[in-house]
Image 1 (cartoon, one colour):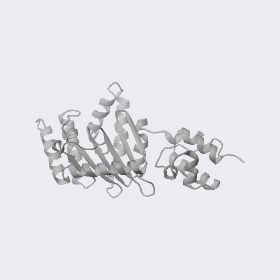
Image 2 (image 1 turned 45 degrees about the vertical axis):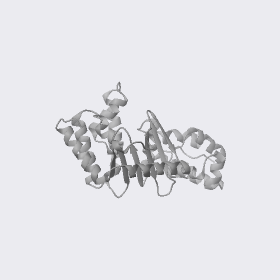
Image 3 (image 1 turned 90 degrees about the vertical axis):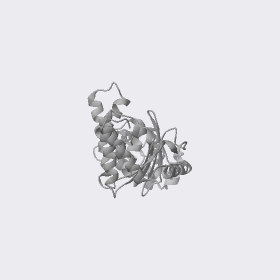
Image 4 (image 1 turned 180 degrees about the vertical axis):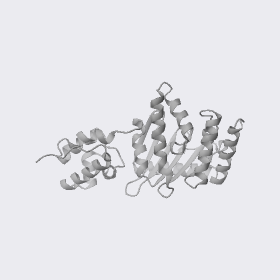
Length: 279
């Protein structure tokens, strides 16, 4: 009997790979928990692979072929599903956010990617890659703007961001770029596309001082937390870890300015940047 055909990378390869995994698992008579036990992962992780929320890594593809008797099907198609426009450390988080129903994010030193204006995004990408060609920077900015389309319909995604005051006062790209970036952010808030709170300097110490935190919730999959550092990122679905960072985020919201006062501060800073005053 001929084996399964290669997946077509042009037709949502991750979703197709997940569907094939579900079919192969059910055919073999495994529950998600039972298959997860064979791979030394949780049953929820298998569910996330099947739903396309999580990326299938090569080591899991090899184990799935061995356990499910699918010859080298998952090995052959794993590379197609792993292709991404995003940096490797962020790709899984960027792709998971498309399936999320709610995102809660704390940003310490920059405006979150989904809320960035093009000029600000360009300045950030250039800072990350100072020797890259303009074409590379153009591609990175285009990918970031494409991600922001998630906010086109405010009923599809709830995005709640807590942004450190430092991110708003750091002149990224110069005063004109910052004025435009903050006007863009204020516009999203006024259009009820997002909820934003500013964490002021006088809030003092808080539990996320060492980095950025992103919590993502889904309809049919367990929540994820994404932790990011300089050039690194990690997606974690461990329930205890997610719960701990959810408490951290709740503490950040309690320490931050209310959305109305946050909007007033953001618009005031935008005016200061536009008029050449130090923010």
